[in-house]
Image 1: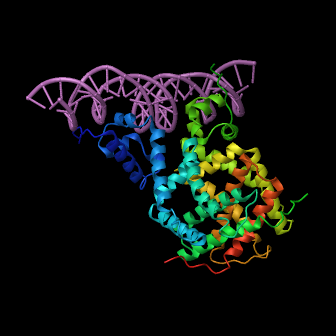
Image 2: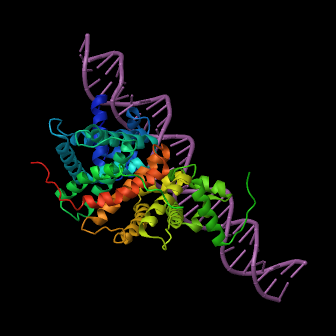
Image 3: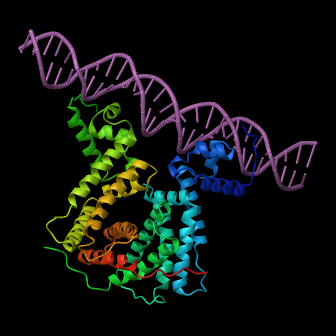
Length: 202
Length: 202
DNA sequence: CGACGGTATTGAACGAGGGTCAATAGCCCT
DNA sequence: AGGGCTATTGACCCTCGTTCAATACCGTCG
């Protein structure tokens, strides 16, 4: 049951551990990813993990960061396309990613919400990249900016996330319809900002 | 340092522990709410907690459920108002709640995302109540239902949540403006569903 | 008003899991 | 082939959740 000691280069070992960590998220949540389990799966001792990561938190952060980098890379739109097509293909790629990596993706979203400030930052950075892509396309999409634009785009992103998660678990419309809905919701929300705000009661 | 033993009725004790749990969330995240800390603050031994709750998870769930019940109660709209006013006053109450209970609120949202299935259920139930209120008002708001309505209302709720959290941390518009934006976004999003979906590339 | 009994409460003990470190042994280099 | 650098180990400690038999508070009844 005990493995022979195998000596790898630091880079190789680190990569192995991160890759393994991400793949384990397919069947486990982040806080079920214990040092014990990882060491067992990697065929190393628990102690070794601490040569590569300061503690479990930092390891978790590194794993989540790797997963989000992967997600961002896979959803990068082709810059030669026009803004509207970038939006819809970006949404399609995002949807595909969530569909085929549901558990790791949920770990990202969950981790975001966990108490850990750094995990939350990783998540917010990732969302920032996604919304940044939109923000950059605003002019080309025929939309204008206001004080609330950033806020609303972030809100729209949250809506996309929630909707996609719900849809993957229970598809109530076709994939193309969903993409169409979400794409249409973006200008709809931003236009809502331009109509005067109604004063609230009292 | 050790307290004299105090014997309370089960109901009183349970209430005390739940109330204390909720109030401790004001300065701590859910997973920083340890048995040790709670026992210390309550002036009881750790063991006692296990007469009232099966384990820590169940205690956490009970605390979170209490916090969400509180939130739902405080944001219940006056049924004698018309639908649009219910919407805006409901949003205003929600905003007020998040403002004055930011940390406990974040614990709810965070817990939702944590690995715990039951915490997620509590969160989804709470959101379900909020969106149910909207769903019930749809006709009165002059909106129509389609296959995607539920999905989009959930999405809109996620947008509200995200936007409100961002806004509380960095108010970039006035409170009334924010409420106006969010209220306007609801019909905007639902109308977007009615325009035909654009087919996606390829 | 005092003892008595039910049960709320305790605290010591256990186990699981994170974190540390001096000792060990693979692999590359000459 | 041997030696040295350092990747790797495994035993140890500590924190924290959890259990349970023993204890003592408080309402009740004589």
